[in-house]
Length: 544
Image (cartoon, rainbow, N blue to C red; front, side, top):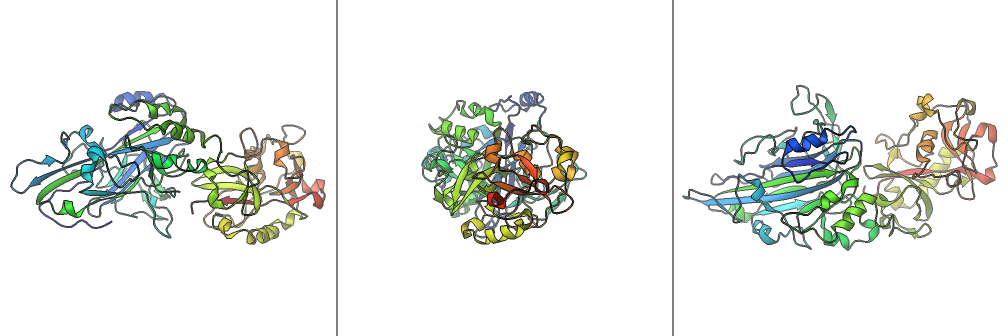
């Protein structure tokens, strides 16, 4: 960000003075500033729930990155509210004068909530309008041709600790409540400059250097924002199938900014704020000034949206907030309403995969698919809705290569890399325990760890391509509320059989999903090539 001009007459600070309030296990008191009371609630929790607000700030470059990390193993919903304070003192004066009356530097509860215009995030309104002259906030993160930014995950995975991950010149509110513009209070590595971390970086916290576990963490990547931050009125005008996704929505009446999706385990939001830069008017003040930002972050479990709807003592929630939170809680508006129908042939940008339920059928660029699962990080597993008939299982790699080459370029551009060669093994039918005679589920797959570990996921060292599902994929994707809810919809259209990549013998034999949906071995069944073949799957990421 633009370097700060040197000026001995002024005092500068954009401080992180933040409080993280966390709901886990159905106990939540997010209005309270009393950490001890909230910790008592958190002591009741046994599951691994946890999130951390990150704030990276550097006063020399005016970079300020604010986002939320879910380091636990269950989904969370997140919101953040920014408050600002500024005061100035002319040369020769003794006292500072705040630009908003009644606000006090050392009392952050008096600071002014950042409230934008209903139609423009870059224009503040009401008391907040006083800051338009002096400070510009940059919302969201977009860089042409660049992937999402990188960060070091929090070392502090104590979900009873309300400390934030603040780096550089940012200060955690629990470690330092000073508002003098110089006191340290960082709790996380990094100097707060833009793009400080990148792919391949790591940090060893032995010592510990920073609060938390004495371990080494590799740099991880924020989610790519699917659209720029917007006000809730702008959100309401979106098509229903685009209302849930990876982006920020600000209730301009209260100042609360909400992540418009459930933040899945291991995911980290895109930036709410990317920079806070002083204007030429601030740099022209004949004397000194102080400017600060307070960041208040709150996290809840998706079943507790009423806590976000509780009355605000100073402001009124927007009328659409309840619909917004319900959409995020459910993963969609009216359970996938608004996405194209199964036979509507559309381009990828007309589909919102974030709200798609497992098992949904859709047609994209001339091919019909079944949606299998949201793999997190913007990645979605899909499969062609029917097999490519007339092909032996051993032919599948060649068939997939040719099929993939014929896909629309808009689809190919979304496809994520998978392993060039999947590490699998073989298991014979007689060694497996079955849930029923139709071979719907395998009961002892864990007895074959090489088979159970063969899960289809993104592999950045691999190739963007089509592939066959594994036996382990079929097992985890079959059941109530999953992609395959019965033998009937596990088979291809027709119905048709299709082959997996898992071997049924030491030779060329493969496991197949039969035309009735049950699992069988090609080496023993040899079904007709007219009735089935191979069925390509893809992992796509619409945000890349």
